Length: 414
Image 1 (cartoon, rainbow, N blue to C red):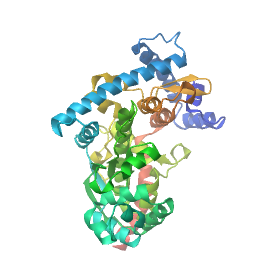
Image 2: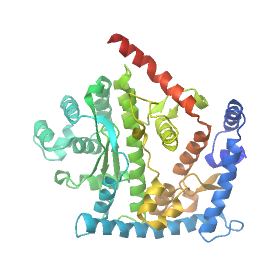
Image 3: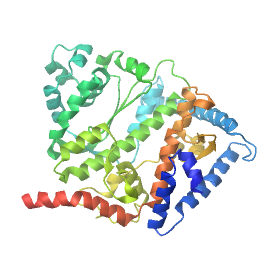
Image 4: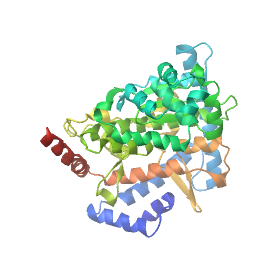
């Protein structure tokens, strides 16, 4: 049954099968790979029936196009919901982007993060001025720019205007940051409708083909405006990716908060800002993404002791929003996508994905069957497989092994 997983993940062989065999041996042959493969077959067949199709005579290409039709139908309902939300809570115009922003800002889950102070960001910008951004936004001086723009708008604008070389030089400064440069605060979720931007965001969306900017070190999410003639599916794609980024921001903030006892804290900040934070561990013979650890503890929130990570973080810091469940609460028709993020059907050398993010991106980009996206499905399936092999005691020991020596050293210095 591991062959199915290997094919769906497009994993390199024989390395995948060897690693999976080692996992099974190390954990006492629990047959997690066989169980997961069986569940995948059963659940994909159930989803196909839910679409009104017969799993026995539906071709992968037919399935792909039916999923696209389903996405189109659900996207239209989601757009209507967001317009009503905007008209009810924001403005009479019923703007979709305004409805999306209100939705994200109204999520009830924990939103506290460990993030860079605004005063520290301004100090960093003084040392590495974003000269092109200052000119583009019409400011005559760095001082005026720093005075009138918020920390989030300053960094977001600089990331859209400045070169990759400037971004690299700016983040080099993070190596000198200390935990005292950070604070606990709510996630920042804003729309890029700042008056001074004047078309900057529109140009960025047209060039980069996405509407989300995320800054882990700031605990901030910026929504760029949807183009005037955005294709169908863009709203669903943008909202799904925004919800995913909120999870990543929460996980990154927790990782930074946990890492503040480390002597190399600044280097960790630099890495987290540029890439996904990872836990150095011998589990599965590879580093694990911290977002996976966050999901693991969120699943076990009722079984884990409150003191697991004290005094560094609390269990509420380990929040993780199931994206499809969040959307299903908004629009009942979207309940179809619940439990489907790691489901797929194999065809030739590539699978057909049931993942909502893949479906939305396939649809809004009008990708033909031969060019279909599967990235989000494969990532979700890989995480689902790894989660089955994680054990609480093993993960806790790995976290302690990474952090306790630094904690002990810091205590001794005091």
